[in-house]
Image (cartoon, rainbow, N blue to C red; front, side):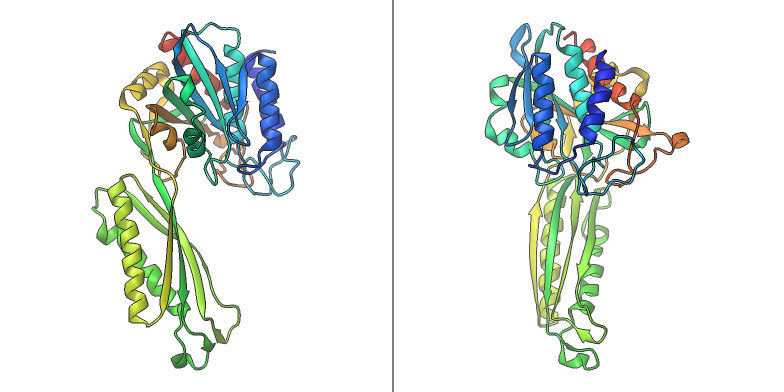
Length: 375
């Protein structure tokens, strides 16, 4: 079988065994066995995940390629013949395609001489809690002399056959906030004897939605979204506590920090005005994915007519932690096909694409190496 046919088979097998972050043990074993069979030097990235190495003519320089390997806690609802065999789990974000692309790329390169070395990173826990940062901090990549890094994401918002990319920031930095509104519960018929956290939560939500429109410069992109609210369980009882949480997105650190500051200040002010307590917890996640200008220009030239310059997206990706260490390019692999009904978004129980997308991904890497005279 050729590299593409094998990659399709890899994807089918990996799709059947989805595992969530830092628990991708079967997935790791599968990848290790495949890469060892190709003759690569391999090691585990963390407890899960794999790093493979191909020595080039000049082994003082390496180019790295990364795939994420984790899945989501979603019950699959596709009609695939190779559906998930793990109840309640699914490759609903396309990481099975990412692994197939990188394994197919490794299959293609296994017997080809390269002018520099190649590093293949199969990273755990991109969805949560984030595997890129601990891999970088472990120092396992230091010995490879990586000078640049590339990654991709299947993208159902872009037509199949298209490759979406742009220089500079392409995905946002992200964080999450959690708020505990601690009031005073009581009978719903005597609200004056309570401090109603449900009513106050509406004030908090309304005020948080003013941050982007009134505290951030109009030319800066930012998002503050409240994603959940929990409080109360009985019609005629005012609860003593309401919990809520949401996400923060921005492209610039100053904007992100300003949002965090305003969340804290708003909650402090509302708590004081209602004589109650609001506990604020903010967790920082990923930095913005910021594509190197020069490498992106090379990548665009290497892909011919398939390229589509895209707008930046507010979704986040921990590929940014690699870009903090090495210049790199992250791009989107179009998978939408409306005629075949392949339009479901990422993180959807019915998300799926088709085999040609895998070849498009492998070929994008091959075209890049050919353009750079590495193969």
